[in-house]
Length: 133
Image 1 (spheres, rainbow, N blue to C red):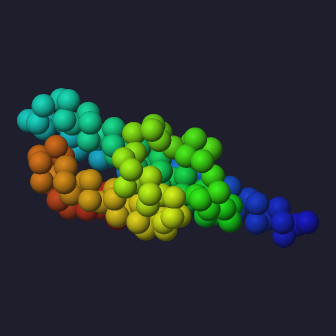
Image 2: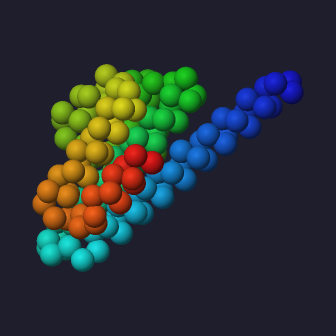
């Protein structure tokens, strides 16, 4: 039982670390939109999509830790923000139980698009460090 408790504690620590890192990265990325000349509605829409993808990535990491997969769970069971906003292609990909890296790639692409559209206006090294974390 001692071993089981240690594993449980380790799993809990990893879960807290995943959530803390995601929150830290998300808040940094959102802060990088300050000073953007892009209309507020576009910035808000981009950051909303970003928050949804971060919640999706967290849900995927948690299901992987639990040994579950996304196919067996409904989007509402995963506690993903606004699952009804996923387009058909995203729902199709999520239904195939993609790896966390696929979802992380979506997050990276969204950030790069936001940089390209001047939604994120921070120096590239700061953004890169945030993505890497």
